[in-house]
Image (tube, rainbow, N blue to C red; front, side):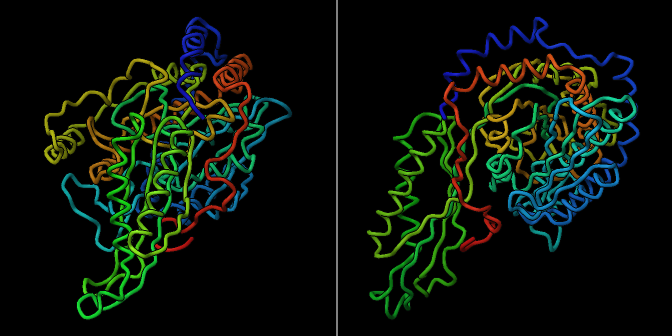
Amino acid sequence: MKLLPYLKNISAIALFTAVTGGAQASLNDAEKGQIIQRMNLRADSIARTADSIWNYAELGFHETKSSALLQEQMKQAGFTVDAGVAGMPTAFIARYRNGKGGPVIAILAEFDALPGLAQEAVPERKPIAGQAAGHACGHHLFGAASAAAAIEAARWMKEKGIAGEIRLYGAPAEEGGSGKAYLVREGLFKDVDATLHWHAGDNNSAVQRISQANISGKFRFHGKSAHAAGDPQNGRSALDGVEILNHAANMLREHVPDTTRIHYVITNGGGAPNVVPDYAEVYYYVRHNDARIVRDVMNRVQDAAKGAAMATGTTVEFEQTGGVYALLPNNQLGLLMDANLRLVGGVNWTAEEKAFAEKLYTTFPNPARKLGSETSILPYASDVTGEGSSDVGDVSWVTPTAGIRAATWGPGTSAHSWQAVAFGGMSIGHKGAVVAAKTIALSALDLMTSPDVVAAARKELQQRRPADFEYRSLIGDRPPALNYRESGSN
């Protein structure tokens, strides 16, 4: 689905409507102050939950302990929990219904880690012995804070007699597994009125970004093994097929639309240099904000793989393991979240926390960093083109969706780095998560009590989508790729 032309046609109108009062929240300042104070009392609990998930460091679709911990918290808070939804053992939906009628407000929670990034919560490189993965994208904080926000919103609804339903979507495998795309494909958001989310970051911001659509998958080459020195003429190297594919893909980069991204990593290249490998595997991502371009470029990569197999006398098979839409911004929700984020404010670090950050900065490629962004909120903006991908994109095309970033890392920290793991495993990460939890709780309750905001957000979504839009998942009809992190078939 091509995104940018539709954004250009309506984004100015939507922003004007929101700024000039098209969406007014009904919670007053005193009530919001009470909610903020109550969330302060949850800060220690948020930190403990985040630390537990940080220590589990479970990869996508295998977040058994992390998911169970969040599910148990939701049950204890009076939520009804459906586990193992959409064919994903670690996915869940926790529901709290109060009264009849009212909107259904969804809050997203993530909890998967990244491979190869185990790191202690210290300001120098120190991998954790015996642990392969690490929370380098802050999903441990994401899950913990979102759960706390949902619980507080439900508690307030019950006390004040507010009708509606709060849902927490426990969404696994955001990092390449496209977990939310399966939830959307199964129709599990069809009755949701609005969806809120957040992400770890190096600043506080409600800027609404356009992410990259993405298709990912694995090319598996099969050849014929032989002694690499004594009988090479009878061998057919699967690794040669992978290498020719990679070379062809690198030549392709010159002939694809601007901003297209192609990444790959060889996940299996053989076992010994003196054995011609009869099996090799390479894992590819293709990204662009236009889903049609993503499909086209990935098809061209698949053609290159067929050519590589012909050239090397091998065979190749392709398994698509992921596919997500670009994020579709929503200014009605984005400005509401921006207002609440500004009410909550940033965080103040202690002297010890500042010293931790300063020491970490010496490990950055550019060590000249300035503290301070953690205390402030960036100016609001929308339709800002981002460089990464997220399966939140699929959610945003079927229900109005908005999110924020909270300063859980020091300024300039790159996601997917060991430095992000270190920040996220100590109090700096915890404080940012509390900012996010407060903002989401306030925003969810604003939506519960403001039908005009919900209606305006839905209208904006309809304006942004093509008139003939029908959601079709980029992952097709395949079942969840539960073992996508492993080399070999899923």
